[in-house]
Length: 131
Image (cartoon, rainbow, N blue to C red; front, side, top):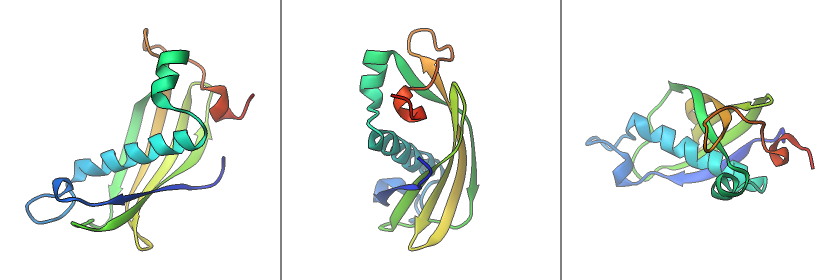
């Protein structure tokens, strides 16, 4: 699980402001999509996880560093890399890149919680590498 996962994103008109530059809040959407697909790459379907195991992930903390703007029609790669795994949380490093040029970086801490109580619950075994 040490490798970097990457998800392609194209910038659409709806992602931009009047100047054709990606609105800052949309970087969060791009990163969320990449995290969801990263989990899916490990066989974790977040809807099934919530329904079957009564678990879900919530963003505990997130820090973004905006370096350069993305623009209308850009092809971006949004990456996810595992930082630190804990019993009920995971720290991830994310980046939004255009043709090798880093536009935005993010540090995200996800908490695993019970769907019904929203109290911390142990990470799925699939994610922590247990069978």
